[in-house]
Image (cartoon, rainbow, N blue to C red):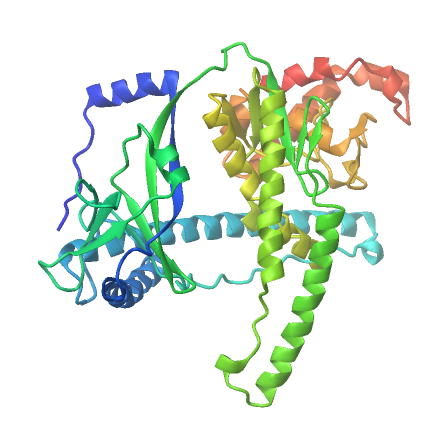
Length: 485
């Protein structure tokens, strides 16, 4: 059994810290390596292995998700299996990673739900105090418990303890993959033949110790990876550029540029696919009532939806690449987006939110920036679309529609996405805001700054009188500096 590694010494930590200041290490994956050179007998041995591996991984995933303590990839074995000790340990590590991701996403979503409940209670109390409950149509937030992860695709995330890639020297193959199987002491040797683009990607590279095996549509695939150090090229005094994420435009910057959009052709394709899936869902429910076995029921998924998903991610990648190309000398500041907690009142909008793959944008943005040696940082996104950059007043009514932002107090007006991007850029270096642990603390801090702004500008407010006009105020840039106090 593998043991827990020892903690790094103080000198090693300092060395890593010095390296992080000058370099960014990114991990590149070499995918779509098809294992077609192996004979059927060897592939059958892999099928037998995964038939035992996947159920065991599912057991540990469920155990870690339901446990009160955080997942521990070094936990002692619990379930009995025919796998070797090393394979058993790899199973536990893979399950711990899945469970950790699930629990983090669920915790974030539940925290957002609690904050929505508190916001709803505050809005309801305000409506009651003002005697306008008849016009109060806001729905109370509800919580739906998450389903536990179900592992359907056979995947083995292995390390050198169970899977070793050996360079071939006297054969037509490029590598030999040595895999531990159920037959202890008799590993399986699978030939690996690389395509020309695989060889170009791996030329001069040192492969990582980790490999991934997965099976799709009856075919086994191999994924390799290697690390690459990219020098950090962003200067300390580089200008900051805020990046707002949305559906209307995938990316909107504080420099008044927009990149990519889910509207237009992709929105029409999504609408057509959604109607198709709804019809299939109705047919499935009708056949299920008639007693048709589940194995013969039509699936609600389709190739068109999968194709649309790939198309959306490709458009996001193009938008991110264009943004990075236009801001090579800048420091990118984007929101720490939690898509799992985002909800709309209308089901149609929730469907668009799911289809737009907004969660892919921060990941791609961080990857593209690291690949180019650019500095990219995340900041708290709470109330970035509702906060006024001039007086820091926070209210949903500040954004009457998707395109417009207009402050109810000082009258500051701007395009909503551009204003949000400017707000995100202004939050870089704001230590007080970064120290807030919840959105309620963020709102309290912003309202405190709003009260301070009112005291500083009380005389000007009285001279201006209602309604406050935008022309009475100085340019908003002078007020953005106060967000770093």
